[in-house]
Amino acid sequence: MTDGNLLDRIEGPGAFDDGKDPGALRTIGEVAKALGIRQHVLRYWEEQFPMLRPLKRSGGRRYYRSGDVALVETIDRLVHREGYTLKGAKKALQGGAAKAAAPAEQAASVSPSAVPAANAFAYRARLIALRTTLVNALHEA
Image (cartoon, rainbow, N blue to C red; front, side, top):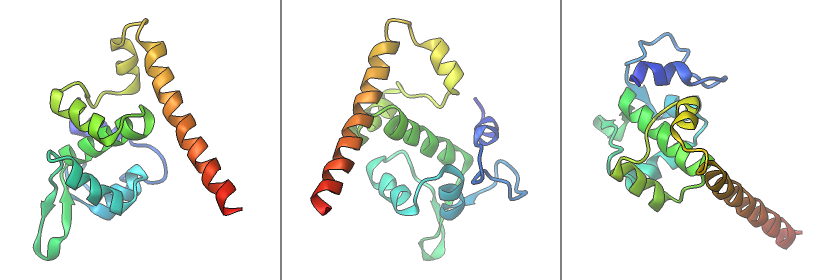
């Protein structure tokens, strides 16, 4: 997949609809808005994932290349949709197991016997997060 295809796949109100070229540099605010990820999370991911290195200009201002945006989208998919821990996502990216593929491409490449296990893991991660939210809400009440 090319980086332009990734930018075409980003949908919703936060998509890059600013008239810039798809390969243009993006600020951390633009990337955060387009992908629905908070800026402090992107800065934290820079510390956790050595391969995520946006350009830094004077004053520490970050500029994300299209490859950086693709990597952020992949990290977001692994962590928030597939239930990986940050450590697990880092290993998957370093090992080449994680690819920035479209969901339809991923479904076609996964064997039918692996789908229930992968779904079970993602559902379990979501249930744990929900349980934690509920426990915190009960403690606050």
